[in-house]
Image (cartoon, rainbow, N blue to C red; front, side, top):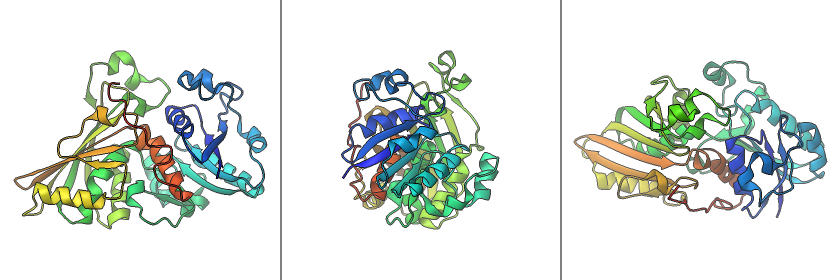
Length: 351
């Protein structure tokens, strides 16, 4: 089965990773990379590292998209458009799919479909949600935490959220936490997107480390909502993000007080049981190392417990597991394909 695949907002870092992953997918076949600002340009001119894979393919604008899709095609649509703009593009693409009688699933990597309630989205991101009528058609979760899917489309959590959710949901599933969660996470510069800004400027970022938006980052309410969705718990997450001196990856450290009698062996057993059938989550006997996961879809988790406190460490690639790879994993689920299709790339290690 070949499924015609479209990427909306196709020129950012997440889109570059989607294009790379799709080139190795058994069932998802790129038919259109949509970019209004780069329409007509070669994909290889924007992503030179993909020249051997897409030597002749060009970006198209949205008006040209209908020419790329055959009526009745099975259709997979990824949106990597910016927050606040993605919802409109998704709505227009779904209307087009309907007019072409296409069976369609959407995975949105922006924040536009992460909240079930438009008011919650607007409170965090500002501005009006442009496709409120579609919210009930989307589920938002880390794929490993959504055992049964009853929605047609998916919104992927943010990269910080993915790492922290993987580290915390088992804690609430088994009621081993007392009080607040304290999370610190360091991200690479690609997390700020492709458009240059002070936070990704090499003289600032290189050989540097700094916190930003402490206790005020917009991923915190998202994490709290998704913990509640997955476990029913009303968690309070005190989150301090950091900018690291590397291009890609996230290293998250989560700390909390734990219930009396909890041991490291018991907590390891909890995590291993919860993620037993999750190919891309690896529970380690030691602290994870970022280079072991960068450029892959794997999440490595390490655990320790001492004197009534616990610590969970989670390393992921922000562009893959935290965005493009997690989105492909979701699309595989929506089409009842193997979770791993297109995603079994090992980390290159010496990046």
